[in-house]
Amino acid sequence: MKLYRAKDYNDMSRKAANIISAQIIMKPSCVLGLATGSSPIGTYKQLIEWYNKGDLDFSQVKTANLDEYKGLTRDNDQSYYYFMRENLFRHVNIDEANTNIPNGMEPDANKEAARYEEIIKSLGGVDLQLLGLGHNGHIGFNEPSDIFPKDTHIVDLQESTIEANKRFFASIDEVPRQAYTMGIGTIMRAKKILLIVSGAEKADILYDVICGPVTSKVPASILQLHPDVTIVADEAALSKLE
Ligand code: F6R
Image 1 (cartoon, helix red, strand yellow):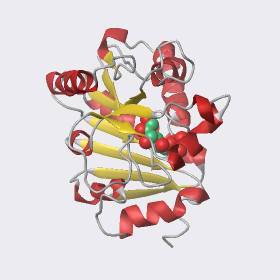
Image 2 (image 1 turned 120 degrees about the vertical axis):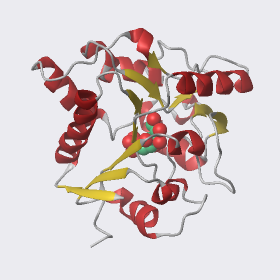
Image 3 (image 1 turned 135 degrees about the vertical axis):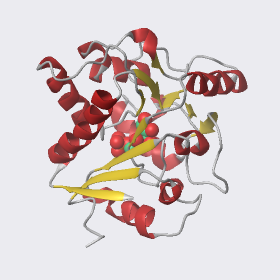
Image 4 (image 1 turned 180 degrees about the horizontal axis):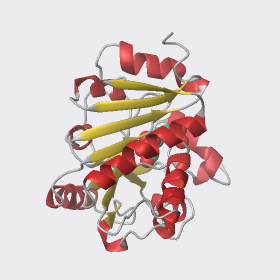
């Protein structure tokens, strides 16, 4: 694991965007695995800025997002499809046909999971997977459990995740209870992984992810076993590691 210390959220975002733009420059047709949530917003903003300056070209880039809520339509402003469009895709010259997000409106979970896994395979796998870290150690929506789920699947969100995500909805009752997510196996098959972590409230879990045992009770701890992981975390998130 490579660990880069960032001063704060903005510095973390700039460092993460640097790593992603290096990937795009080295392989213009790369496959980026993307995340939603508050962690990557600054990274996407920075990428957009560099694109506007003429320093980045997304015309051949392909993407596969980690996850999507089940039951939200694409035009729902809390769907991850909407998030990606608003926070990145509509601001750069990416071809929408090259962007992939699980279809939250597909009722047949097995069918959707198999379709999504097949898409990633047909793209030749993910070159660089961007991840945020849940307060309970989740990556994608792989919640703490007795096993590491292998492939894309449907999950029941845990209370702590519903609680953490309610800030984006009018009320907690509107937070979907299920989501499609890449599995831990899907994430671990990415050639490179970039985990970004910001804020003092993630300090304990980041410590467990880096220094604790590899356990499915802390899903992100499995990243210790991946051969090419870069963590960019700010000082607040790293405060337990000094
Ligand atoms: C989002 C995702 C989640 C988030 C995690 C952290 O696509 O897969 O695992 O990365 O919940 O969320 P934030 O960044 O909002 O703290």
